[in-house]
Amino acid sequence: MKRLLPLIGWLSLFLAFPAVTYGQNFIGLTKDQIPVLLKSVNPQFKLDRNAVNHTYNYLKYVDKISEQTILFFMSEKNTCTYVRWMSDYSNLNDITSMLNRNYRKNGSGKWSYTDKGETYTVTLVEEEWYFTVTIRKD
Image (cartoon, rainbow, N blue to C red; front, top):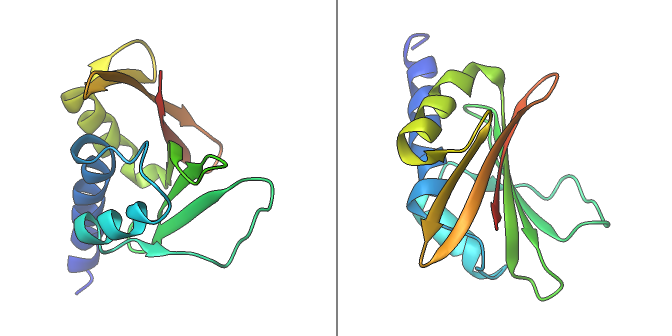
C-alpha cells in the first residue's frame, strides 16, 4: 500500500493537469459549466468552499492526493478569464516535462498554445513552498 500511494498521486497529477490545460480549455466557460466539465475529466478534484476571498470571484478545486489546487477566476459575468494551478514541488519535473511536450516554449517558464484561433499563454512561477502555473488568453 505504501508503494501504491505515490503512484496514485503521480497518476492523478499526470492525468489531471493535461486535462485541465491541454485537453480542455476552461477559459470562456461559465461558472455553471466548469464544475460539470471538471467532474467528467478530473473527478479527483473537489470543490473547496472552506476559504472565501470576497475580493475575487473564483471557483477553488483541490486534489488532496497529490497536493494540487486549481483556481478558476471569473469575470463579473461569471465567465472564466484565467486559470491558476498550484502544486507541491514534488510534481515540478513532471509538469515541466508535460508543458515542454504539449506547448510551444517561449522562454524561461513560459509557453503558449492556440485553441480555436485564440492564443493562450502558460506561465510557470516557482514560489517559496509551491509552484504555480497560470493560463491566460493573450
